Amino acid sequence: MSKKRTLISLQNYSFTYSLGETPALTHISLEICEGEFIALCGASGSGKSTLLELLKPDIAPCGSSDGTLETALQAQDAAIVFQNPGAQLLATSVLNDLALPMENSGLPPQQMRRRMAETVSFFGLGPLLHRGPELLSGGEKQLVSLCAALMQQPRLLLLDEPTAQLDPIAARTFFDMLRRIHEELGVTVLLAEHRLEEAAAIAGRILLLEQGRIRYDGAPGEVFQRIWKEGDHAFLPFVPQAPACSLAIDSHSLPALTPPQLRERCRPLLQEKLVEERSTPVPPPGEGVLAFRDVCFAYEAGAPVLENLRLELREGEVLCLLGGNGSGKSTLLKLAAGLLQPDAGRIKRKKMRTGYLPQSLQACFLADTVGEALHDSWKKGGLPPGEEERMIALFSLKALLGRHPYDLSGGEQQRAAFASLLLRRPELLLLDEPTKGLDPVAKRFFGETLRRLSIPVLLATHDILFAATFASRCAMLFDGSIADAAPPRRFFQGSRYYTTAVGQALSPLGSDAILFEDVQKLCERDA
Image (cartoon, rainbow, N blue to C red; front, top):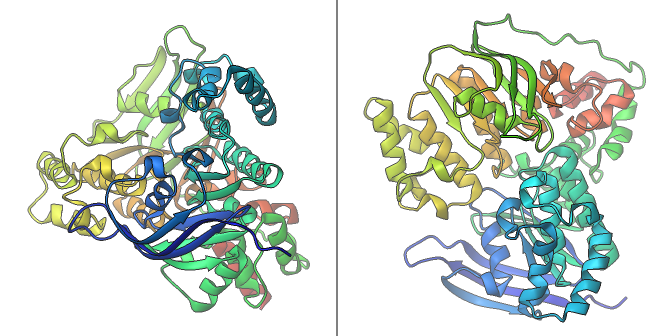
């Protein structure tokens, strides 16, 4: 069998953005071969985005480097797709956005039309061609961005957390398309992703970065098994649900990577008693602090976004709002914050200090440095001396204080924005996709922080596992109103699409398990 051709080789490569800063990458030795599918993971700020950008010379960041980076690719041979799909669509229609990369490359019109025809057919984007980007859902925008990246027929596709803002179904569609691109078109893929549940199932290799260094490199199952056996607490949270559960059952075999594989591993544990009867404790209802009563809202002359919506947030609860891209979650939060007014119906708010974190964090930072932004929030919150330093330590922001907020990674921005919000002493939190860009360790810390605050939280999210772990209640927004609202176990039980990997695996066997801890209990019962 012939050896695959090396596309990019890094030998003892280090990169620093500016003099005096800690290197973003340190002594990286890595070969990327033709036809590979590599998943890249690590904590926020570990160097994932820097590595991706360095592999595409025409967008490589400025800084100093050491070691060697050799590539067999021309600039047009590598294409990149970023986290925010809206920022990549620059034209007035999908058709023009798809044509733009080919126009920039100077392709003849006939070749452009031929390439457009076959690529659009491959993606099934024909019905969207004449729509403006403002009429696309988040999933459609990201598929258009991916299609545009492939218009130049790249040999290497780089993706920087492309599913961070997609709902579970749109994310699955996106991953399915990535798999087809890799398998059918032979494109080499390097995917930076915190959503390892799906990525690990299709990647042939996984790289885990820690502070700019490669800690693990190998086949996903082998890497997860090694982390598990070594008890590496820094990386155990990065092991997805399916492999973690199967390793808890049998650490000597390579782990399951998909829900169907996990189902077969768990089947013997559930053979004797298929349904484990458990009642989910429901806390007594607290006082209502925010109530929507038959609320309707539409943007100008458009179709209604919300229609006869009824929802109540109670004192001390974390209410996670789920639903597809474009279902109205962000609109609902803006109405709750008073940034929009309903066309009909009433919104009753208890008088309390409200903290609102939007999906786009640009408006959250009005200062030139993170330190200045935090100090301004501390002054407005009127907290006693020492609270600012405590918050900086709590959110691990000390190394970022001198940085401009726009220069931070997505996860670092989320941490800084949330710390700034808490320094204003809110009594009610309205959070729009607060876990996007956060690594698993940061997500757990964020969820535990919300629990400790014991204040009411209304939170819109696509992160099913976060909602299942930390929500008091979950609500599904569909067709302008609340389709269902219940405590997490009851909400996710029996769901096929909006549920965790454990739920997907074990629900067909009659179990109500939705978390890793549930599978641990099954193992203990079987022991």
